[in-house]
Amino acid sequence: MSQQKVNFKNSNNDNITMSGIINFPEGFSENKKYPVIVVSHPGGGVKEQTAGLYAKKLADQGFLTIAYDASYQGESTGEPRQLENPYIRTEDVSAVIDYLTTLPYVDTENIGAMGICAGAGYTANAAINDHRIKAVGMVSAVNIGSMFRNGWENNVKDTDALPYLIAGSTARTADIKEGIQTIPLAPMKEEDAPNEELREAWEYYHTERCQYPTAPGFATARSLTQIISYDAYNKAEAFFTQPLLAIVGSVAGSAWMSDDLLNIVATTDKRKYIIEGANHMSLYDVENYVNEAVNQLTSFFKDKL
Image (cartoon, rainbow, N blue to C red; front, side, top):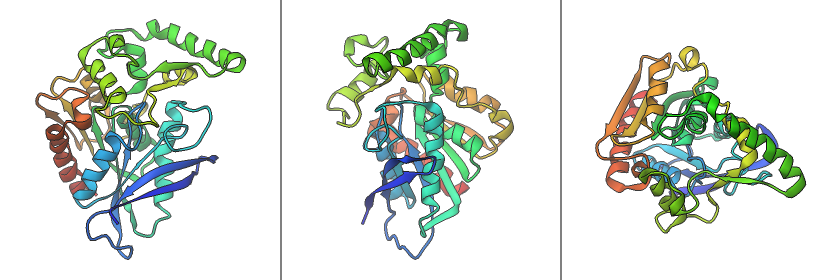
């Protein structure tokens, strides 16, 4: 048994059933206890994409891992579909940990968490709040609030994002009258991409590269009312005391969002690892880059858990 699909009630909302895939290390025994790593997917992603890839590769290195679908997304339940409420996404990490603590073979003193893109930001936020998380890995981290407020390249002022907040509020009214309004989380068409990295995001989610039927690539427009004012790193300077490894591509336009956290975290046990030649999207699925990232995550989690 190398992996098992699981469904469990979300401890924060009894009406939502979470869907996850547990990956077991070689020689797994239910009579032993294993350190576990929770892997959170990007905004717009699902567990079968990059999160599942990292979870599988880390299990091959001896860890118990779980990749899961966020509430309202993928095979997890919840209405409206494709809600991307960052506060709920952050709490989902803790809800998965709640579930893991019920499994007899999980070493609850050695829980690590990692994420890719927005999943990394949500993981960081969860670690600030939930100190059952003993170590945090981030790959191509995105603080989704900063990205929506300040743009992919951090060149927009916070106050200039006010129209997005207003659009989210307007969408909430329209949802009631006309049905759910949506926004793209990655470009829905190639020609909509403003730069090469985001063209790759379109390619990842909407071509054979990695498209998946449960990942439509859009979010509810009402999510803007939560995203725009959200800060994944809120109070990190006081409460993020766990070890941190941030992995970024050397040519990633999003790298500033990893630096933002590294510059303020309370922990002194922090490190940035740069993968030469990789951009933001390369770290999702380009084999040599992913393997380099997994090697770093493996040594980090083996040392810290």
